[in-house]
Length: 220
Ligand code: AMP
Image (cartoon, rainbow, N blue to C red; front, side, top):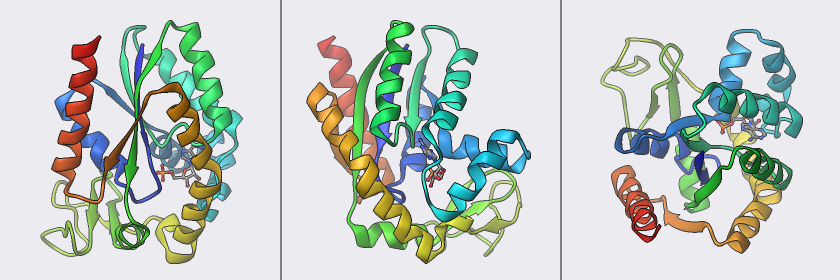
């Protein structure tokens, strides 16, 4: 089992970059945020536990997150490659992930830190719109749909995530700074961290990541 992690503040484009990488690699995309939103929508117990934290922009407790991630990994084959987006988000989650990986003879290939200025982050989140039906992501200025409020792909209704409103966005950025920052040091110490400029166009960020990943494969 091999794992690549996308680490970065909300609005850094983790989901968008993961989509780009998915088409260029055989990694299975695992987004804890998407899994939690699906659980909320389906009215599952884990969704009920997570909902109030998500609406406030707080982190969902580590035990809930580890349960959904472990279940997800158990669905795959032992030698599958995973691309984690939005996980781990705390030092405790990172340590528990290490335990899960060593139990499966797995390893972390790389952790990409997506770096973006605060102004760009706030603008990206405030303008983000998501299709209620298929989950496609738009931005009112940067990636506008052909018809305002309507998904180009499936015709579904576009909405603003309840945690993308300004007050919650500012809280999520603070939460990232306080709780996720220590992960950067953790992975830096392990020698797996790579910093990538995610303020540029998506294609360029994806290409920069692919180059580092390919370099890693040649070295191995
Ligand atoms: P995201 O889509 O990654 O921005 O996640 C949306 C929300 O889901 C976050 O603001 C958290 O409330 C929750 N969440 C997602 N992933 C995690 C995680 N690894 N640890 C704790 N909470 C999470």
